[in-house]
Amino acid sequence: MSATPQKNRATRRVLAAAAGLATVGALVAAMPAGAHDRGNGHGHGNGHKPRTVDVQLLSFNDLHGNLEPPAGSAGNVSETQPDGTVKAIPAGGVEYLATSLRTARKGNPYSVTAAGGDMVGASPLLSGLFHDEPTIEALNGLDLDVTAVGNHEFDEGAAELARLQNGGCHPVEGCYEKGKKFKGADFPYLAANVTEEKTGRPLLKPYTVWKKNGVKIGFIGVTLEGTPDIVTANGVKGLKFHDEVETINKYARELDRKGVKSIVALIHEGGAPASTSYNYDCDSPGAGDGISGPIVDIAKGITPKVDALVTGHTHQAYVCTVPDPSGKPRMVTSASSFGKLYTDTTLTYDRRTKDIVRTSVKSANHVVTRDQAKATDMTRLIDRWNKLAAPIASKPQGWISADINGRGSTAPEKPLGNVIADAQLEGLAPADKGGAEVAFMNPGGIRADLVHKASGSEGDGVVTYGEAFTVQPFTNMMNVVDLTGAQLVTALQQQVSGSNEASTKILQVSRGLTYTLDLTKSGADRVVADTIKLNGEAIDPARTYRVAMNEFLAGGGDGFAALGEGTNKLVGASDLDLFNAYLAAHSTATAPLAPPATDRITVIQ
Image (cartoon, rainbow, N blue to C red; front, side, top):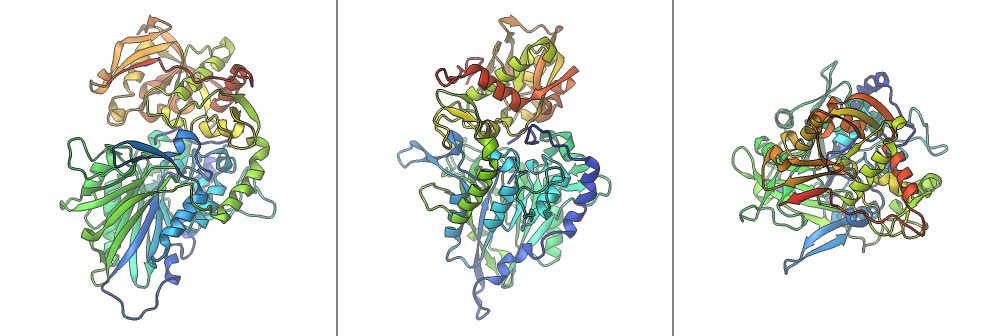
């Protein structure tokens, strides 16, 4: 999901750009030896071999450092029951993901595990506080074989991505555990469509080949071409992002020339199925069924040499077939997010042709349920890092009377979005803080719900620093800028037009701003311009307004070019600091903060 870039703690870690690209070239050379053929040491002897062998491909995507089970509605998956009703099932957490994957591998001598990007970034405090070292350690323990990079792998820049791959202690904060040096990922990160601007060389390996007993499967990894639009400029400085289809086709030809005929593309871009239930039949023939979004055109353009697509980014669950350029159906999968699902795909490998028998490809998503045994090695890992995080994570910030849904809300206007926007307006309204009259929050930057049930020993209703951080993990600095009324109206129209027309991004707005969103219309017309009011008065196109937003939106991120046109900028406190200050000012143990009404955007459907 499109989201603000992660900088984690309020200390505002700054990565020196110069150090950045100097170290990145070492990535390809420093790839862990043999990371791609970990399967070689397992399985049966080399006696009589049958013509075909079933290779199990296990995959997941968009983990975002969620080592512990995600709280509240963001930790549920939807399952359609035989009677048509939909049931919410609590899912996720690496203790359960490890158990699910290890159970699935049993009886499958040929098994490879791949991921579709965004393994780290926008992470809860347990991972984010330590620059996601705990998540890389967990993925090593899960026996991940390969992943594509996602946009969030670039949140802290190319130098930090190089460190996650190669290891070494953080350049500013050093090593977190006495006597322990961070080892880095023992699986390759693939970024076929990311090159260094200066040299034109690939930033990371474009592909890797998994081998076992003569079976070879190539994996090509790409992130979405639009990564620079959804990551801060510092995160992608000196890098160029190329077309996904052209890149995959180029490297598929290269693999084919090398005799690798079985190819899987790992693509950090996705789509939206017609149903949010993980067990929805994506290939239903009914009107309105199937899948929409960027991945459909990408899939239709990728060479038939590629046998299956593992996708991500949209945090949706689907197992669909989309025809390749020759018209043959090809599997396209995504496993929701946060480790709540994994996909199990059977690839039947023909030893004679060295290719996948496409007609035999079967795939299904499975829930990572929380009623199975926990993997004890993952429990130990979580406990170890939690002890280090505890002094910061457990500090109370405020109290709530009930769940305040953000990430888990599918409505255009989210209760937690209103709280965050109000916190930003209140903190930046004083004249000496910027004189803000209205605040905007991008929905992708809200990473969790505020959950009433205690996450630890703090007691129900208490919001800890760790929980607040999980909601807003980027620690973006706030900006207050001058925008005309005309620019404000254009910005609201950009929620549903231009690059956001197919997949709308509805800004969360502070109290006092109201308007009607008519979803029966198309494009910019969905925002009914003459209904836009601030404190009951129509927006004056010629008047100048002081507008608060995080630095990501102020840079025109998420397709909001109009917000990037602001002038007379004042830089304020971080979004997380304002959020915590608001919780402290508006809640006590005896008078907790209640979920606000969602009456700012009137939706016509």
